[in-house]
Amino acid sequence: NAQLAISDVQQDEVLFQLGAVVDEVADAQQRVADAIEDIIISIGDKHLIDLVDDADYSMFALGTTALDQRASELIGTVATGIAATSNPIMIRGHTDSLPYGDPRAMNNWMLSSGRAEATRRRLALAGIPESRFYRIEGVADREPMITNVPGDPRNRRVAITLLYRAGSFGA
Image 1 (cartoon, rainbow, N blue to C red):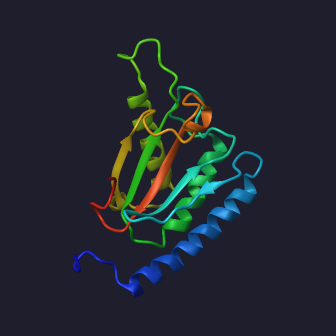
Image 2 (cartoon, helix red, strand yellow):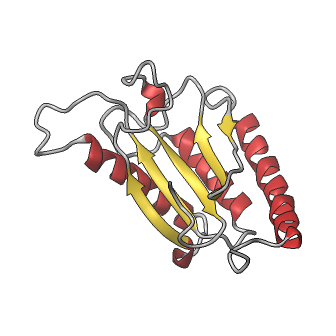
């Protein structure tokens, strides 16, 4: 559909802005290199960029929605990098597959949603306007990063996605 297509000029401008985001994230990685060694940055059909911790490190302590201090610093730096863009933001929280004693009191769905919300709050604290947040969701343990070990702590993470436009998320 021609109305929904992004022009080459717009795409070039967005890719230029992404270069600045990548530089900001690289600087943040250097500052917290002892804990966070890698960030996945992917450009695809339905989203512009995903920032996901991909190190031997967990962004959240087991069973909590509190960001680790180093993860909080990284997300603050990501906020600085994406502040120059105008894209809508989607945040997805993830958990490992470890179950709770009583799933009626707390479960991985509630926990992953809380992690996404904690990330939204941290981005907002760093100056991202409320109007930019398009979708905040938890996906529990349904999309593990470490697929062969669903209980791996690295599956406790968040993904921050800059959408091309509102409504351009998920398959």
